[in-house]
Length: 333
Image (cartoon, rainbow, N blue to C red; front, side):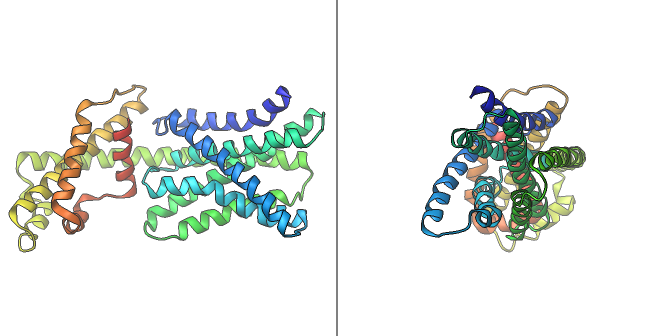
């Protein structure tokens, strides 16, 4: 039994570990990976209960259900936790999207494979090699692909639901193809192992280059604007001219708080990029005791200027999903 469990769980856990090792910027903490695995396990338990209820009330043919209904339900439940992470700005790049997506799939596959260990009495170890590699890599791969596609598309359409729909459609399609059993199980497993993990690794390499470029450009521009604000020369810049144009809409004390908010946001952004650069160089940066106070001040200033002030400041604040993720990362470091 222990050998069967190992054969079922080892492949997908190795896949997740590989992604964590490839994450040179250490964007994802072990705690986040373990929570994602737990979320995937809960999704598997929920699917088991739902599937049992549906099949007991509606007489679906099992092959039809497994090809179309099961992929829809299982990919939907696996995607739920990732959607929460994306909506809460906890995902910034394809790298962390892929790692956490694969971790969710690993948790799901682990519970599903353990269930099949007790329900299918087959002593042949090859069955569990195929079962472990095939199903586990499929679940990890489809959820990772959903996460990567959604995060990438959200950068272009941040307020649209279409990225979620498109990513979910791709994951469900791949899952359904796998459940059609077009190829023999051993061949199908081999195709999955030879295509999905290398595809995710290739996406990782591209994302690492994108992250490196974004850090370099973003760090330089943030430092330049921050130094301009501190030196008092911001009024001669386009940012200063924009803030000056707001005089007729906001009182002086609100404008002062808006400038302080911009300065503080830039300072936190610079700190966060510095932490990522240090991690990439192999150094672990200890938590800064002053960061918590800076976030308290940030919340106070946001409350002071109000929703209208934040909306007016949006063109110069550049609070994209990556910047928001960056601040969350610094706060939780």
